[in-house]
Structure formats: structure tokens, C-alpha cells
Image (cartoon, rainbow, N blue to C red):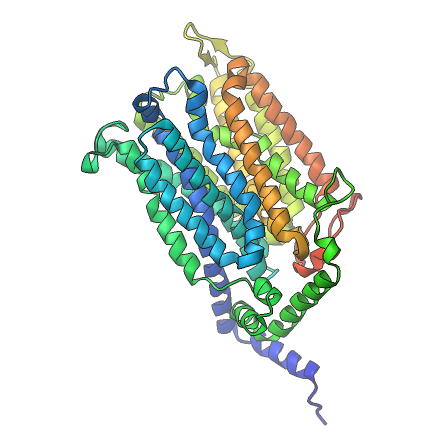
Length: 504
């Protein structure tokens, strides 16, 4: 005799879903497509952060900034301040009006900024438009990992979350290629191209293309099921979950979300970020420090100020072809190693990758510090590395990019989308991302002065931060592999050697 119990129905449905590889494949392709579309915000960040490099010398000439190095540096870094502000408020706004509307706001800000920067008539005008673009990028940097974490099945959430960093690296490469093609077409960054506008202005205007693509894709994305359930739109939330998860898991996933939301309402006071550890909850500090260490190791120095490094190791960077080739190699390496994280993050976990990355960065940055300690200053004041020290510094730089790109680059974005409990995710992610942008700004602004003092000291400092990051991960960062987002409410930052949290 067979009973028709709910448990049996659910088991049968699960068996059916498991036995239908075609259906499973369709769901997998759907969730990948949604995650790729959301991660395109990272492409905007990568594109904007690198597009300025091809234009900065021409900007100095047009706006007479040759004797104002601090102002010239601020033109490069000012967008990061906008990023910090956008990131700080993005989570709060997304919790009020939804993830998709905030994505559209970010795309709109970046679109307007691209046109305004390209048509800037003074340096203060350019700075203002760069800050506006930064607001859009900061918004996208927060919403993308949050949205992916909330819509992706937990079994593949780490790999899909890594798409954010992959998009950033592709954006850097695309901007580099775009700058080079425009400069070559005009015969120089400060030479007129189309409609009488200089090539450097078109470098900014072409940013309109990724902004429009991002906006159109975001417009077609479904809203986060967690946001919909929180607003009482249960049927819509169920429809979204059903579009990315097997039928047998839809009811359980929706029930888990609603249970978490009920607990949040019953314990509304716990939605505060305030805690006993310097005024914030421990998990918020974990997110902030993860973000800061990602930048304190100096990764953006490689991409923002690579010319001084390459000239020090003996390359002729006055030749655009040589500079382009070196930068392309570094960019391609950065893109390629991101796939390492995508492949391994859901197999071996977040913590092992971060620990491996920290150890590798200590070695590679340490090699660069030792190499630059052997530098000989030329009559023009430029450090040169004699003998084999130049190639060793170059090897150290690319090893650094490899270890960072395969671990800390993508994994931090994954963790920021995962570690915070539902009740504080939006606000906490915003604060952590703002800390990341501000640290990026600090590193970008201080490198010229630090490198003028001593490149050996500068890279030694980054080595120290990489070493501290290893112990920080070992003692403070929890493993989130295989856990549902709802279970993060009970996730504690424990201080014991065995941090592996088993799936529940």
C-alpha cells in the first residue's frame, strides 16, 4: 500500500529533477546567465579604473597640470571617492527599492559620467564627472555580489560570485585595448579624432557602450527572491526561485527565506550593525578588514603605475608598442588566473584559497622588495635594477598578479556576498565595499610619494600587509562553502584552528 504524503511527493519530485539532466542543464544555464549580467557592473569598474591611464598625460597637457602632480594624481584617484560613497549607500537603497532599480541607477550615473568626462572643459569639471561615475561604479560593486549571492544555488554560489572579479579583469583589458586603438587611430592621445575631439576624450565617451549594455541587461533581470519575499511578494519570489532551482527545492528554499525574514522582524533590534567590538559587530569588522587587505597589498599599483616599474627593470616605455605589450601580458594573466578561483572556490573552499594567496603574495612581494633594494639611482633620479635583479622584479610582479588574481581578487567579493546575516547584509556590504574603495584611494595617492622615498620600502610595506592578511584569515575568517545564506545568521566568527563549517 502506498501513502500519498507530502514527503513522498517531494522525494519523487527530487528524483525526477535528478533524473532529468536536460532540465538541470537549463536551470544551470539560466542562473549563469543571470549572474553574468549582474557581474557586468564589475566590467564598468575595471574599464573606468584603466581608461584614465591612456588619457592622463594628455589631460596634464590640456589642463596645464605638469607642475601640479598632486592635482594630476587626484584626477586619477577622485573616482574612487565617488565609489566609496556609492558603495556605502547602495545597500541601504537596495533594501528599500530593490536590487534591480539600484543597478539601473548605477548604469545611468556611469553613462552620464562618460559623456561629461569626454566633454569636460576644465579640470574641476572633469573631476566632478569622474566622481559621478565613481558613484555608479560603487553602487554596482555592492549590488552585483549581493544579487548573485541571493539568486545562485549554494552549490555553485562561490564560482558565480567570482564572476565579479572576472568582469573587473576583462574591463581592465578592454579599456587598455580601447585606449590603444583610439590613440593609434588619432596618432596620439592629444590628437583630434572624430568631430574634432581629441582621442583622450573619446576614451571616456566609449564608456557609454558598457554602461548602456549593463543597463539593458539589468532591466531584464528578475528581482532578488529575498527582496521580493521581504516585501510580501511571495508568488513573485517563488517564480524567481523556480527559474533557477529544481522544482523539488523551491518550496524548501522559499520557506527558509520566509523563516529568516520572520526571525528578522521578531528581532528587529539585531538588524543594527552596532556591537561591542569598537562599535561594530565582529562579522562587520571581518568584512571591512577583508576589503582593506585586498587593497593594502598594493595590487592596483601594478595597474595604475606600471610604467615606472617597467622602466626600472629595463623596458623602453616611451615606445607605445612595448608598453602595450607588457600591459597586455599582465592583463591577460590577471584574466586567466581568475578562472582558477572560479574552478576551485566551491571545491576546496574560500579559506584555503585566501591562505594560499596570502602566502604567495608574501613571497612575490618580498622578492620585489629585495630586488628594488639593489636599485641604482641614475642621474635623472630614476631607479634602475642592475643585472638579474630587473628580471627578478618582473617575475615577482607577475607572480604577485597570479596569486592575487586567483585568490584575494575574486574570493573577497564572494565572501562579502555571503558572510553577513540577511538582516544586515545590505548595510554591512555597503560599509565593507566603501572601506575597500577608500583603501584603494589611499594606496593610489600614497604610492608616488612612497616610491619617491624608496621602492624597496614601499614593496616591503605591501609584503607586511600580505603577511598580516594570512594571520587574519587564519584566525578570523569563517568558511562559508556549502552554506545557505539563511544559515549565516547562526555563523559565528570562531577562534579555533578548525574553521571548516559543514553544510547543514
